Length: 431
Image (cartoon, rainbow, N blue to C red; front, side, top):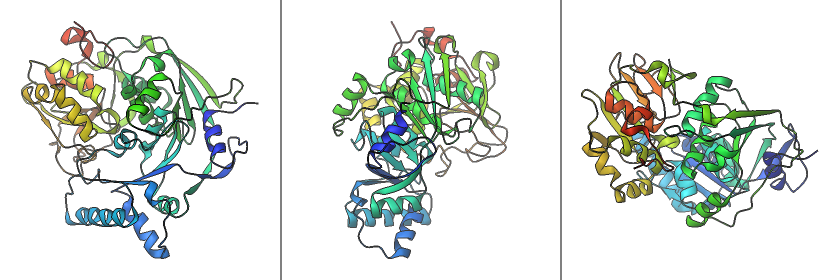
């Protein structure tokens, strides 16, 4: 019996022995990440143990992205401590405004195909877009990684999902992930790895692949891994990553489940009612009035997402009474969008562009607080009650294109019905 990608990566990092789902292994980590919302626990644990030698700290990125900028003295002190610790131990530091952890990690070449990556955030599964096993852990786990370079794992079962066909113009990876949540439910893949394969995956650009992997966190997945191809290798080379060690599953690998989805039949989707798995097609709820529109976050704040929004809003204004905010995933994404003129397009359309970070998504910075009864549509990954600062407001989740189309009309709108509805890869409107 063959092995899945997850089994192969964990086996390679646990001494090369064959492992199966359910086995518990101690595996060497290639790189780690800790962000400011979890750093205190890690630093306190290291201090409590009195450990001075941290050989893996130099391979642990410290990212200041959640309290970005710090909204209070406590958060500012966390940043102070992280800067001092990173400086003392030679750890890479990404400061306020540099970007969201899941964007800066691959963007700065910290991971490659075949890697095992641990990060203090559930959306560390994003790294699977690059054929790596990325997974979320707690801050205290990261203290152990910095001390030893190792961590224990239970080898997950794997679900193989084949996305057949071709996404229709105006439909994106975000819509696939929402449709899957509507079908399988939040936590529907709890502690399982997902392998994404198929023609629809191969056709995706890297930005959309990162969205596909990222949203697996809402499914409860331990990891979400895509196969590597020429697009993967070219992206990694352009970002000066280490030489790739691509991993593929054996044809006779043992899967907990095999699922086939025809991507060509999918319409734009939205999640509603404070539940990320309460999903419905946009055409079925078109016309629902909105007050706020948010594009960004670790799920959909990349360049292609900004291109989608700009294609819709170019030469136009958001609807009267709608407040629109865009938070790029990183400083590099912002600069690339500026070079393409996308920032000017969005600004002239009435959007506010914020520094790269997570603060708006989780309402830490208070830059997007809604009034009672207000409705927001967001390209974020979660719509928990009170997520944007007011439990008496509503949050709908959709693709960047759906968010931009809704901002334009002032109501939830199918992006295929605006800007001619014709799209090409990369989010640019077709001529």
